[in-house]
Length: 106
Image (tube, rainbow, N blue to C red):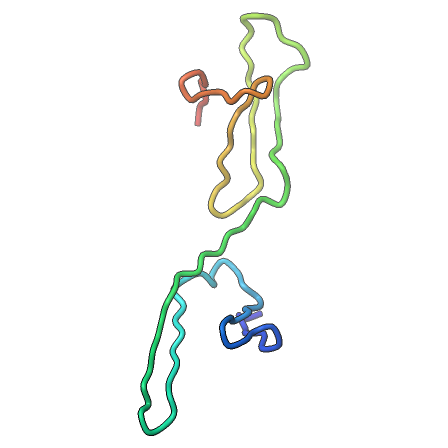
């Protein structure tokens, strides 16, 4: 469905848009005009960004139930689609793993 204005939820200060999708983002401009005889106009514009959150939490694959000291751990963390792309972080025992200590491969 195309983007549309829902007048019942809009007012003199706000416009309620329905059927927003990823292509709806961009610069929106509002223009007002006075009645005759002056016909003065004023306008303003603002950028609207559309975000899509992941539909579910991250998924971990690989790995074993138990490890010994010195073992190499290989697991994969995957996020569902999102816009912008989700930022994934690794935690071990509730502590953030720093980039220097993470042998992450892309």
